[in-house]
Amino acid sequence: MSLSTIFEMFVLSNMLFGEMLLGSDHQGAINRFFEAYNVRSYNKCGFHIIANYYGTPADEFNVKGVLQVRPPNDTFVVSPSGKFRIHFDTTDINGNQPFLYDPDGNIIPNSTYAFIDSVENTCDYVYHVEVDSLGFPPPPSDSGAGGGNEYDIYVQSLPAGEYGYTDYNPSQPLINRINPTYAAWSVIRNEFQSTYTKGIPAMEVTIAHEFHHGIQVGNYGLWQQKDLWFYELTSTWMEQVVYPEVKDYYQYLIYFFDNVDRPFDDYQQYNYAGYERCIFGIFVQYEYGTSMMKKIWEKMAHEPPIPAIEDAFTAAGDDPSSVFQLFAQLNYFTNYRTQIASQFNITPYPLGEDYPLVKISMSDTLSGSGVSFPDSAMRLTEHFYQIYYNSDTFGLTVVNNNFSAAINDDKESFPFLAGISFGGQNCVEQLANGYCLFFAAANHNDWGIIPFISNQAFAEKNNGAYPQPFNPLLFLQPLKIPYPFSDTNDVTLSIFSISGTLVRTENSAPLSFLRGRCVTWDGKDSRGKIVSTGIYIYVLTNRSKTVLGKIAVVKN
Image: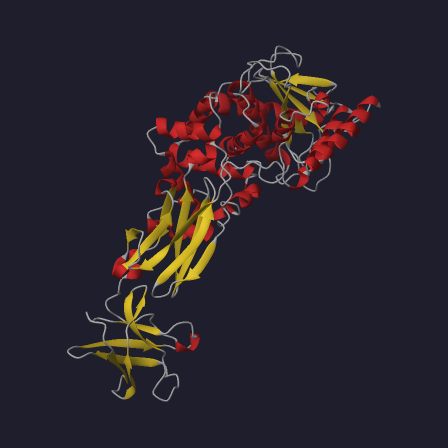
């Protein structure tokens, strides 16, 4: 922890302690704690903030004493299933009384019990999906700490943007081990009007999210602060499992797709807590089924997230490195790219058209000799490159699969060189006409190279000139006429009009392009003027052979 953060927490703790001495409201003190973390701009859930704070050795901070006390409410109800106790206020003295809102954003009078009724029904449905259907164990009993053995949900006023949080008493572990387990409780906001998703749908995904934190903490235990990202990843993923029609997680996806070059296991409580990586849960669910996420959590009862992911897939007979590469493949084919995924035998995410485009690390235009991307990557990262040639765009993805570096929390950035070369070294995949996909790095076992390149792009198309129709006014590229001879001597290029009039003749040397060796024509006649729209005949002649073809010139 930095000195600035320690100072911030010291000031904050003294403020909260002073408020306690003055008899200030309990939830107001906690809310001021959350507001110090700028909850509004990013953090929807206070669980990782609390767990991160509990993990600090700063025992002199009196904030902990406030956080580990359950909120006071004036009444409660037990859900129809008998599995949840919902605590709430029936008056607005402390600002915690719940209300529903109409479509215009106005409070609906006398709607407190309607709000609570929705909470009860939602809680029971969430339990049915997460426990009865998916097979996760329910949160352990708190031995009546909330008034009974039900799982406790507290309805409170929370800072704008915060949906809820899950809390526990760190001084009272159920199983005291390196990853201790705790009996937890959850807090949800008393209105869902100042959130990205609003109304009952926001309430639903919040309860699905927070209840799973109770399952995680109570059954699988808490690992180090740096592992909190997987707790938030899973709870956010669980939202769309229980309520697939509610897409609250969309607001966080840009944080992942814009940061694929950050280590997959990175945790930053201010801007990269794990919500955005719910896409990994969606990927696992889509490719391997929801049971695989449960298997990862079963491994997490004994080891932290990264080795748990690695061991869960290994136990299922899948190579973890290949899994991570497949994850990167799907991450490239989102948004408008979903429409071309089938060309590369990729089936994109079911809702991939709605997802952001992944960040492109570098791009370049392919020349005759090739194109290269010198770069470096940290553990478990994805780097995407684009190669332009004519009207085509090709993709190249470099994936770092170094699970060992992630387990060791290695901060090193590993250099590499990737690209397409003409007859170059370090070839990992041979392409047509002498081109190859190349990659160079210290340890190839730690990397995956994924080209999104149609091999047709490197082949001559019926030995015909391209692109056609040819528009010389665009000035983007010359017309390329494939060189059909086995030698590399100069040839004579002659251009004729369809009536047989000679338009231009010149000696040309073959050049290397993506589709092979070609000679070029800029669309001009012998006087340097651009020719008219029409059909033209080209004639290539070397010492012993002549080749003819047609050119369609269209100026628009």
